[in-house]
Amino acid sequence: MSAAATEVASNTSSQHPLPPLTADSVLRRATRDPSNATALLPDLRPEALDDLLSSLTAASPANHLALLPRLLSLSPSPAAAATFFSALLSAPSWPSATLLAVASLLRDLPPAYRTRVPAFLTKIISLLPSADAQDLPALAYQLLLIAGHSGARVRAPSSIARQIEGTVLMHVAFAVKQDPALAREVLAAVKSDAAGALSGFAVAVLLFVARVRRFNEGAVGVLRDAVVLSRRDYRLSR
Image (cartoon, rainbow, N blue to C red; front, side, top):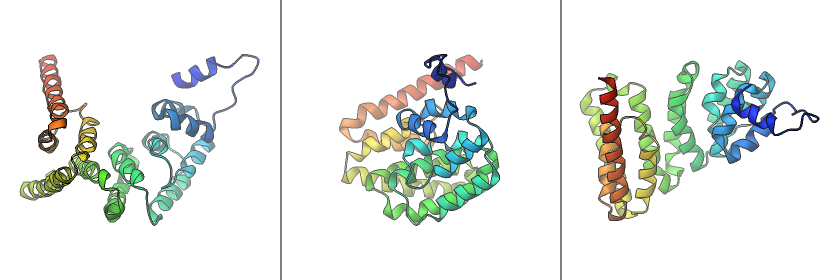
């Protein structure tokens, strides 16, 4: 039993055994704390895993969709997985929050499902015109991360990769210039991935954000933390 499930069980009297976890109970917990709910997934019965997967739709909250990578890694039935992917990809529209949530989790899909990534990218790109303006910089950033993660840089000439990055940076810079408050969203997107080494693209994005006076300190702080972390890792590896 997972640590999260053990914690839940310990809060229940021995005279009243904890009922089996259900898809609904995990989703309720995910609404408050996706990380805690993710830890409970291994304790779900196979049929409950299928129920949980079938309950996720384009209208599901982002906290619920965040369960997908771990849920799929637990091998739900092929029929349930196929039905889920078909329903999600055929939905005529997605809320802007769903666009961002799905774009953010595609890099974490289990290997068995990575063949689905191109279909999701096609769907996301087709729905970009309907996305909320404040989500566009973060979406552009996530799409560039997916391209790098999938090895697109290796397959494409470096000049094309630089051209694509330059175009995205131009749009990010324009959006931030028109509405400086969008810099907060861009900074949050970069910080969410700052645990690893920052790419050249991420550094360029941070430099653009740093030009907005009220976000200068935050952007420079992310860069400084990345440098300190890289230096520490380098010393430990020697």
